[in-house]
Length: 244
Image 1 (cartoon, rainbow, N blue to C red):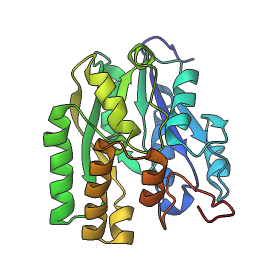
Image 2: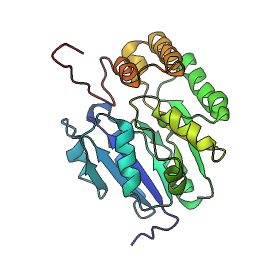
Image 3: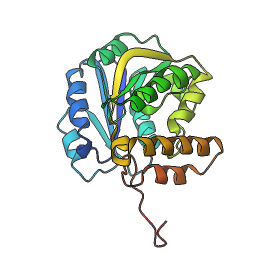
Image 4: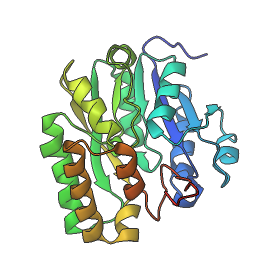
């Protein structure tokens, strides 16, 4: 039986993940470590078989009606028994040794894994380098790094801000006021689907425009609607009668 004190709780937020073929890699890997970690999957009533696939594993599975990934993550944090929480992006694969290391070494207040994409291209290599060693040194990590933090620290900051986009930036900014982050030398290999679907330079340009809008405090829902256009990876916005 798991001892919850000093245990690692891994939270995976899901919404129609089957076609990405990432949870098919993530879940068996987490299942192998189930004697060391607690796994909580928070699903938003997926319709593609994600929920059914999740039930094949001995994980705690929650289903909640929400279009917000932050809400899913917060639901998992509230249910978690461990002292350390790992927010596992549903389209990132962490080195197995990295998860084992984190489960055994819980002195870190918060931090993230070293980011890389699942395809090789100079632009994506630069993007990962910048994310790890420039933005990361400023204490801001995105969720595809697979952020981890002490549960009591997450509670102190009021959990993850429940916005539709840049919740990871808001989370990092709040956490770094409490403690300096640790970048672990284990990789989180992330799907480059946005770049392959939209085009490398088109997606890079879109990302920079969205960052500018974030800093000028644009509406987070409208920004995420644009981010999810034609992909709906984290959120599926239903149009109203006016087409909005």
